[in-house]
Length: 182
Image (tube, rainbow, N blue to C red; front, side, top):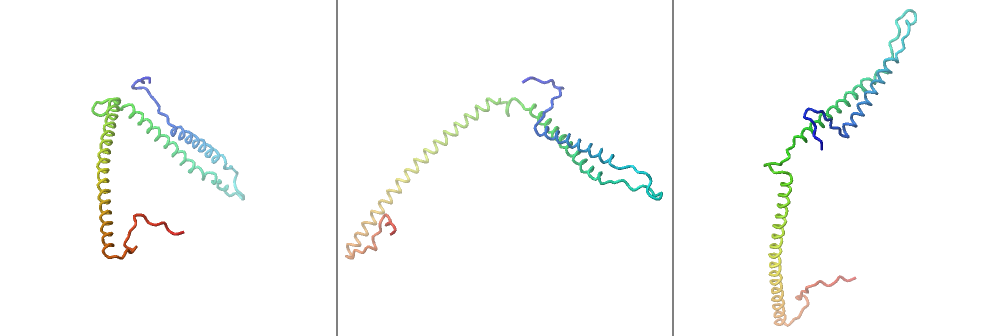
């Protein structure tokens, strides 16, 4: 990138500025045409009938001039605002420091962030492994307790049925539900 002299003029031209300049030039042309047509449209006649003054000029063609003038002013004002915005952004971009906060260059900052990301990923992996280990131990413990409870319930139900002598199917609970009839 070539260095520009500090006093040199550099125009930052954005797509928005080009569009607004085209619109402003079109509004200028429309205003010139409206004024030209409005001023040349009024016929100059002689005196009216019976020595009366001439009729007033037809001002209907001049009704469009305020509207076109408003478009003219707004379009050039918008172009000026966008031009100033682009220049301010250019100056801000030129004044950005090469180093980041704390005197760290962009490359060093990128390296530090990459190191921090790898450290965070390692911490997350270590936490996931510890959580997985705790969850697997707890799941094994709950499964064992459930099995023992089912075994105890089955033994107690069997002893109850043996003492009552009435093997009714209502007291037996199956682990799986029977499929619904079709």
